[in-house]
Amino acid sequence: MTAPTDEALMLAWTQGEERAFTTLVSRHGAAIKAFAQRMLRSADQAEDVYAETFVRVATSTWQLSGSARGYLFTIARRLCLDILRHRRVVREAVPHLVELDWGAPTPNPEAVALLRERATWLERALARLPEEHREVLLLRLVHGLSAAEVGAVLGLEESQVHSQVSYARKRLRALLDAENSAAPGREEQS
Image 1 (spheres, rainbow, N blue to C red):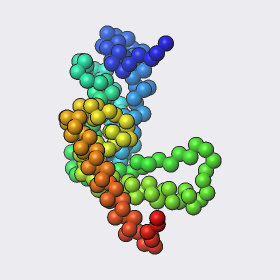
Image 2 (image 1 turned 90 degrees about the horizontal axis):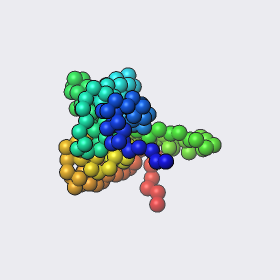
Image 3 (image 1 turned 60 degrees about the vertical axis):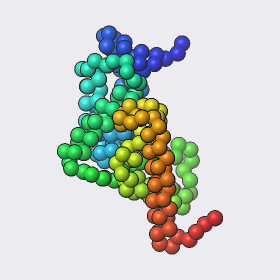
């Protein structure tokens, strides 16, 4: 037996099936919270966005006009933007984008230090991207939304999403290259 789609769960929820809502929260809650954490740099505010996203889902009527996942991220994004506007933050660093979870045996200390250094470089480079490019990368590459879902969240055509992802990747690479070449004691390695 296959699991019901997100859209089927949303419809079931609107018809009063409480288990459907619980399933939606368990499927997407962690991703919503992680997205908010990266946007806001605040675990407390990310928790608030997570809770408010699902409160809004629970109290609203959803129409079959797009993916349920896109709908959830749209709500979360709007809540994050409201908080950012309130804090008057234009461009803020995105901490802990690369979380180092070893799972297997821990690499040697030198490898761990190098990976942490590279993760810090990536976070700094992401923070320097314009907000619209940072958002598209987070939604598309980190949270795995389809181009159509990202387009629905950000109000873009699918072709615009592809274009922005491509541009953002190139810009991110340039920023990482600049950071790498500016690092003291770094020599070009082939």
